[in-house]
Amino acid sequence: MLQYSVYCRIANGTEGVEKHINRITKSLPPRGNIRFFKITEKQFADMLFLVGNPSKTEEKITAEPQIIL
Image (cartoon, rainbow, N blue to C red; front, side, top):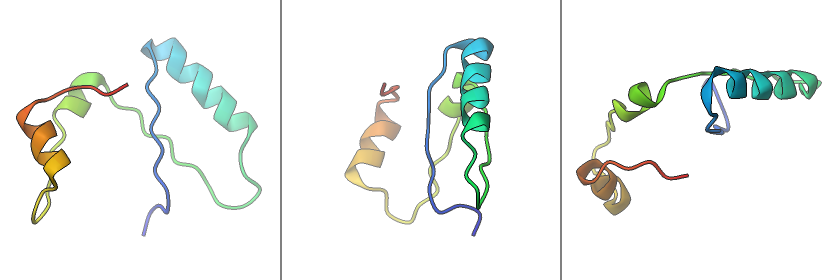
């Protein structure tokens, strides 16, 4: 298994992303590791849900694409 927890943070532009990378780098845990994955809004919008039976929330999001802040 790659991760136990997944956290998401929306940043405005490359400068905002760099700010959060620097903040995380200064607070690295003594054990374990952090993987930072950066995607654009367009890449996020192209995400696919591959599930056996989608939940009502997933059905709604698939039917009505939206960004939740």
